[in-house]
Length: 294
Image 1 (cartoon, one colour):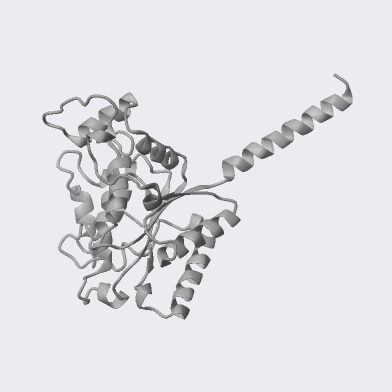
Image 2: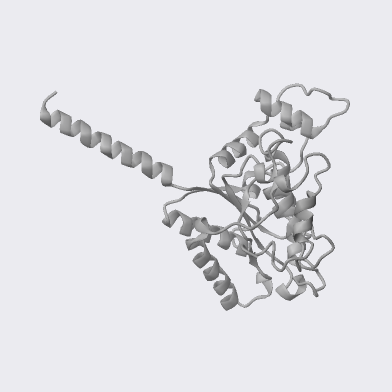
């Protein structure tokens, strides 16, 4: 090999290394989106996320659940071939076995592949009945199967997705004041606890504070534009945001999963409880499910 060929090979190696490094640095974002109309505010919020994150060099993929006609019901149809116990069908056990044997239905495995590759997952939806729409709940029920998304050994702070971030981005039908501690709907922090702790944190996700669009259907066009502009601004630094704080799994005993005595004692003299879910008879921590660092 002459000097020129050696230089070309060296240059090629350097370029290849830079390309590999660039690919490794590129963040992959999955947006799980649930709205029937492309003219909706939810659609505008989803489109803004795609645009801003793509401009930052992210690879963004959208699972448009209604457009996909995603099946919401968790049934034996989610398993290829025969089930283990047809007479007493237990979805959690059967899908865990199907996952281990590679027998889950194709629509589930496709979404699981997207989730495996993602660094950040954004759930974009209109709040229905203080929760997610049925089609999105079906995605959660069917895609986050036992064995894939969690196990007895891998959950909460030790969860499968502890290296990934996730967040809720949603619209409400009620004004912000109605979702306060004195409002008729109750504290939004309490409303979010089952979704952010019971689903996202349970699977190990680092949960980023939610993006709440308060009652856009009641807002003026100018106010809606302001909401979207605020979302665009937040998206610029979203990947670097500090996640919400949850109680680590090792703060609980490994039998009854009760707070360890030393943890309980440590918080006895503090004004607020640990979280919305574990409050020790104390007032709820302010904004614990809404803002990082509270």
